Structures are given as structure tokens and as C-alpha cells.
Image (cartoon, rainbow, N blue to C red; front, side, top):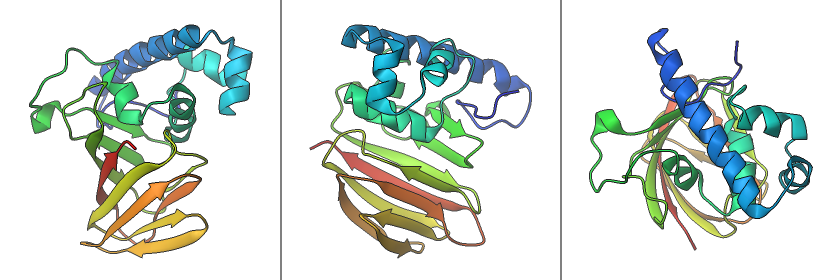
Length: 203
């Protein structure tokens, strides 16, 4: 049984096949990007801080990468998470219906990420919906792209965002703007799930 599952959040066995398919395509793309960089698994492990065995298992789709792991790999490959995930999807469209928006879940961390903007590998701005379960706490040790601009707008619940050791407590309706150069932390700080919109703009 996997600890982390990508794809739509599970509500039955019917989702297992879809999650496995996403894992397989994502693993193949990660292996391709590593090959394009000319790196061995060991070299990528040194650059990303992700163990060689974990990278190998992710490339073979034996595990689903966590949000923190994907963030580290995106930093090495010079992509946002949406860009990476869009590269394992089909042809880009100008309009994506709500039912067709890509959903990716880190089930172990209690985090669900919906790509609201139509996917495109060359996009500079994007909208993402995030959901954190009660008590969920996700720490990123670096941005996928240094200087990334983010706007965090809370729709429901209470969200704590820590940037450069400064904590910002956001309630429903609050919006935080930041440029990301170092570590950040997103934590569901209330007694109910938090839902927020993340606007991301490449520098």
C-alpha cells in the first residue's frame, strides 16, 4: 500500500487506476528530465536532497512523490509544480472545465492541489487551489524557481504561512503577497480544513 497517492483524492477503488496512471507518466517524465540533465541517480540525489533509492522508486512509479519531494525536484529542473504536472498531461487547451482540472494529492500530508489554470509548459502565471486537512503541515525547503511571486488568498478556514521565519496567520478573505527565495511553511492552523487560492507568477 502506498503512503502517498497522486491524482484525484481517493473515495473508492475506481481512483486507484487513475492515480497509478499519473504516477507512471510522472515517473517517466522525471526519468526523462534527469537524462536530459545528464545526471545519474546519485548526482540528482546530491542536487535535490532526495535519496537515490526514493528517486529510483519514483521513476519506476513504485511510490508516489510527496509535495515536498516534487518541490525539490522542480527546483533542480527549473519548473513550477504546475509546469511539471502539465508535461505529463495531453495537449494543452485554452479552456479547462472544472471537472477536467487536474487534481494531485499528497494523502499522507493531508494536502490536495487543484490546477485551476489551463496547463501549459510555457505559462508564467497560474492559479492553483489548495486544500489542507486539519493539522496538515507542509514545509518546502526552497522555491521551485528563486524569486517566485505568490499571492495566497484564503477562501475557507485559517492558514498559517511562514516565510523567512515570519509567521503570517490568514483568515477567510485575507490575502498574502510574497516573493519566495528560501524556505516556506503552509499549516492548517484552525479546527477545520483550509481552502485557498494560490496565484503564482514566474519572475
